[in-house]
Amino acid sequence: MRLGCFPNDIMNYEDINTYDYDLDESLIAQTPIKDRDHSRLLVVDKTNGKMVDETFYNIINYLKEGDTLVLNDTKVLPSRIYGHKVDTNAKIEVLLLNEIESDNWECLVRPQKRVHIGTTIKFNDNLSCAVTEILKDGITHVKFNYNGIFLEELEKIGTMPLPPYIHEALKDQSRYQTVYAKNIGSAAAPTAGLHFTKELLEKIKEKNIDILYVTLNVGLGTFRPVSENNITKHDMHSELYCISKEVADKLNKAKSEGRRIIGVGTTSLRTLEANYSKYNMFKATSEKTNIFIYPPYKIKSIDGLITNFHLPKSTLVMLVSAFSSIDIIKKAYAHAIEERYKFFSFGDAMFLTDLKEK
Image (cartoon, rainbow, N blue to C red; front, side, top):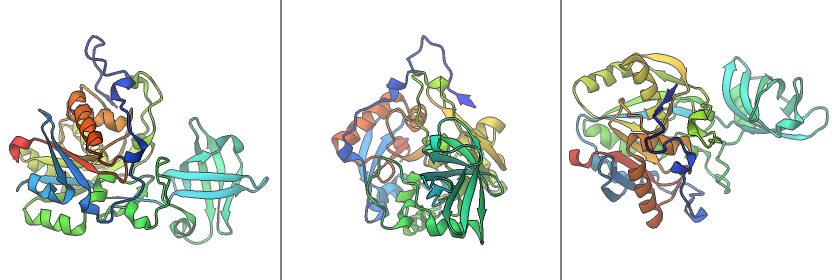
């Protein structure tokens, strides 16, 4: 699903360089902050660009009674595993992306050129896989063979799939999970949710704010780089999302009563917008989406967005630019750089909202 097509005589939304910016590497957070909710928070009016520098635990002051907060409760697999080819002993890295069917997985294999259909990769005495299909961009299909329970074997040998810009080892693996992570299946964390503590969520509930959970299993659709200069040619990868009937009913009720719906993270937003734009309402479902949102598409599903600061030229920068505007996002990012906010997965947060409603 491609959202945001536009005539060529409008501002050049199609040019990937529109979404570029310069960032000093020292601003890329390498480790999580000691206390999750003590990260910095840039509150930005999504319409006029007014900005307020805050601390994340004060986000409760920008939420109001009757709001609905929607979080992605996916849980990250320890999905980066290392093995060797049985025939040559060559080292192979496998990153699990998505279970296609029982024991059959879509993966990223590095180096892909060392494997072919039929290659067996051994990880330990209890776990191996055979290559069944080789696709482009490093994507490979494999079938796992194992003794015991697959997830238990994965827990023994797998590591958290930290992004390549993080160079320091993660001492506490739980810090790459949200405190409400439940449904296992992601190859990356929904990082906006990393700022929430259980205590902060309880305080939000006490303010009579609904907290709802959807699931989107984060994969290539979220973190795959855009290689095309014209972003409309980008091939968006599909990801599985789920919305329960109870959650859909509560979201529709909030919409009908004019109450704000606030997405926590771009994955929550993509889930809600994929669903709402398809059915013209929120509908209980479990299905895949390859929704690609960029300006000048107008998002209809939510009213506010809590998000991190994203990589230059990424689909996530395009998405937040559609939610607000390219100009406001560029100014917000420039402010964050000047004030030395931390960027990306373990970095600080931004709340795109309407400050007049505070």
